Length: 392
Image 1 (cartoon, rainbow, N blue to C red):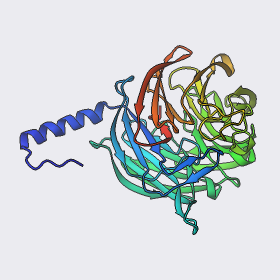
Image 2 (cartoon, rainbow, N blue to C red; image 1 turned 135 degrees about the vertical axis):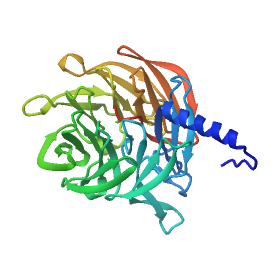
Image 3 (cartoon, rainbow, N blue to C red; image 1 turned 45 degrees about the vertical axis):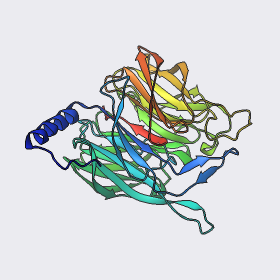
Image 4 (cartoon, rainbow, N blue to C red; image 1 turned 135 degrees about the horizontal axis):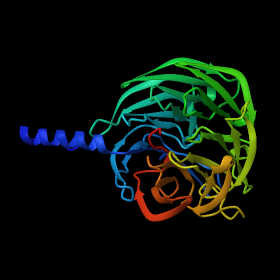
């Protein structure tokens, strides 16, 4: 951090006002970088010495020229869905889960072990800063904040449970643990705040939770969906729940992926369709303003053994329309290698993708139901494993 030895009172006041103005008008993406894991030519993960990760805060006020405003030295991991972080609707706080830590394997290498930390980041500070660390269940993975901004749910993968967090200003605390009986990876909250979906990826199911204020309950109602539903999202109108089904235990094999479609307005809610997408979909985002969703298919890029028939140099953005009471694929656009995190701008006119193996952020323009590459790329300090914008 730069330090100024001689700084007048007048200059300090100007700087303070500028800092407040920037915080008030900034629009943020929060990105978790994992700089300790990569894949070798055989497609096997290589764990290296920890201590080099960061959480990067990017201002997208200028949509096609995003800029980094903070880089916090916090542990993060690409193991898990790219939704292990969330931003409150007023963009005052970001919550970032650290799913795994690394320990020495005893043979000169490193092995991942479950962590239980949630980092609380003050986005209104100039620059944004870590203000608290909260402990939850083991291996906190996918996360969601409700539209009111006062409740968060965290999928505790190694504990087969969901932790309920309350948010009161800058105070975040765990108030409840809900056991779900199976390992869980991601969670989404309905726009009315009354229900949530939780992906039980290894059981090929999605759990249905009831929310009453700060009390969350599980009536053991599950939807059978596709194979390995790693990520789950809910459309902005509350009509559909969508899961990104990777298949093959989440390991790339070149086979087609799918998106499960759950009709949440049906009585009772039920699975109504599958939509084919590219191989190994993981990232998944819904537009905050339009009947549009985008699934990120890794497509054999970045983590597949080189020379295999399904190894490619790019991931795919499969564009889905959710209009007219059904979900259908309407287009596909190439993106970078091993794309993970994905987020829409607040008004839904731009889409941002974090390419893990390329170490960058790629910007796309959304024109109606078309997604077009702007050619604008922001180089990141590391490898983006996860990303979210503000909760709409």
